[in-house]
Length: 284
Image (cartoon, rainbow, N blue to C red; front, top):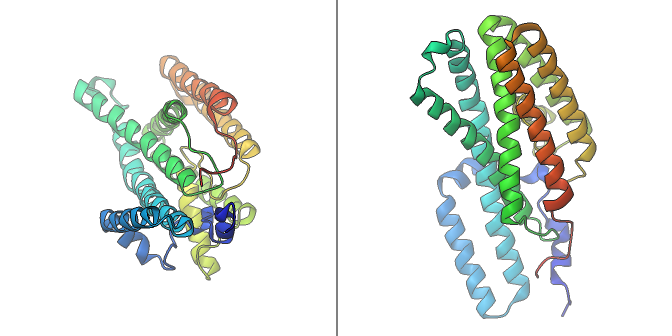
């Protein structure tokens, strides 16, 4: 028997462009989201049976299906948070920031909960994504906590910056954000070239969804080195924040926005330097 049977499954490993196509069509992403508990329970039971039989090949197969199911759900939840909640929260913040007196305590708490939810969705997706890759080690609790912190800082800073500018120039901000989303989506389409459907139009629309996410935070589209992508993205967004703060945003808020973004970058560097697990042989 193959000493490392996981190697025979390398060809079927789930790369980034296959996240939502486990069963081949877009509708199954929704089915996965609605019936995730049933699918997870089914794969968990089959995994337990395979483990009792000491069938290592089946054990790995069902474990991978189990983790991929969780990854699919996290992926859908991530886009639900950004494509539905983010524009609404920016609009609310833009209205509130026109008069800071309206920023009462329960609204502040609601905003903190929202930002925490966004950061948690991204962190959960990254964690599920890594678990679905059998050739990579899991992220420890300390690493996941640091991930949450730097995602929280970067998201809060970016959203506050966009929302304040939107409170002054709503139409111009909408046009600029749409242009940036299309620009980022086009770069993803040509650089990462995700193939989740046979139609190039559907693949491009998929990339445009990531373009919307990239207005706030970077998350990898496919499994590949991300050091230079992070460096380019964070530098690009930091320059945008600095220009917007220098031109339009009051000093007290501008200082907070820039400081939060820099803290997020420092935490991200610390995470990748000390807490990010290297690619190692799996438990199997």
